[in-house]
Image 1 (tube, rainbow, N blue to C red):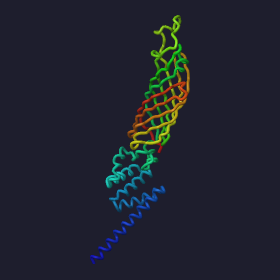
Image 2 (cartoon, helix red, strand yellow):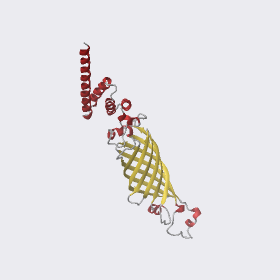
Image 3 (cartoon, rainbow, N blue to C red):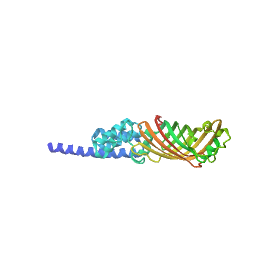
Image 4 (cartoon, rainbow, N blue to C red):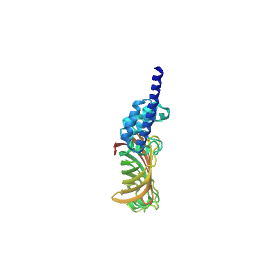
Length: 293
């Protein structure tokens, strides 16, 4: 009698293992076909029958993420990381209600999931330094100058990120001082403007910048976002009562370091036609204010 009971128990265990393997394969097939609702049912059943299965919790967590249930997905991935050494890296990728992001966007479903924590509207303060061209100075002021000048100032940026495309709109206010800029010729001594003490050396600038950027890769688990693209700049320079308007196109590059919903960003714009600005360096600090998804 004991032998018969043992054989029945052993057969039942083997049958249960075979059924579990079949169910697991079925769940993977549903997942790969993007039928996440059916995959979820399968993996939930497996985790209840085999609560020590790290693979089942791993697939269940990723299925949760695919369905938009981020908190549940994070919890199940964390369980998988505890149950098996091969998922331990998820301990370092799960924090502050964010989902795990890989070193490169193409791994671990990162190509789609990166948008879940980064897409949205951002606002930031901007500090910048821009090199205005000699052309601008000579058309806006007098007498004749032989070199460009640095414009420094501040502003605000509103940006919209929808992975992998980024649109930035900047409004900047700055000023340049001509006190140290070289003149091409000396001022005529009989003109009132020749008196250096009465000459206004400050030139005011306002600028509206549009940048369209592309983010090819996300680094360090959704922390670092390098972007490249182009920009269109419209600027107005004012000296005394004289105001000149300019526009220019250029290339742009920037890198953002994100921590939860707060970020810092550094950028470089390079004028292509070199008639208005040669280059512009900027530093920003801001936060995300809404999500697209």
